[in-house]
Image (cartoon, rainbow, N blue to C red; front, side, top):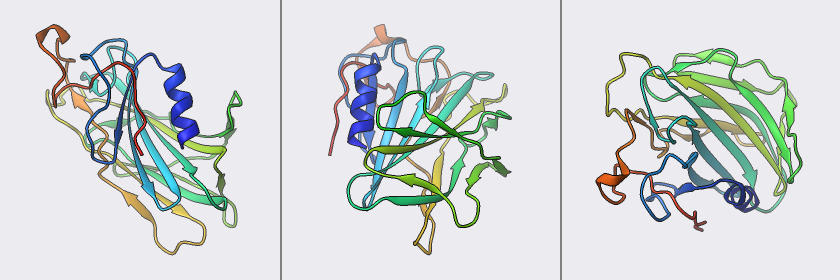
Length: 215
């Protein structure tokens, strides 16, 4: 996951990085140049990164009628390869899944384009799931990252200032139980981004500037 995050930092103009339930890392104030906000959590030798993309006026803040894309990235930090068999994205509370937006891809090193894996999503109440065929899965290695993304729309009647929780659950071959990170600490706020001229970053703002890698 270090390779994945460092590569992202090199290509993103400004990124706020959160690890687990920690605070955003960066400098400066909220900016429309900001294009991503992410949280990272480690489950043994597997790293999971959740990313919110909202390319209109910055990440995390999304207005009624707009869409936001949530990406889950899975990678082995070290040790043997692992096989993902099922991924469930728990949509932000109250947001609506955009039909046809779910996509599963594998990034091999720094290669582009990524390998698209054709999988039909299973839709449930507030969930979007990708399942591998029995006996198969998607390989995670220190060099290969599995990406699962889906896009959600904020209803027109969504409450301004609400903070919809979201999360992810995944299964790994050889493990009897699913691993759940729900809710995650990915910050999403319904409404307008605060005016950066009003003051410096606070708990209600996602800072822009140079991202830092923790842990």
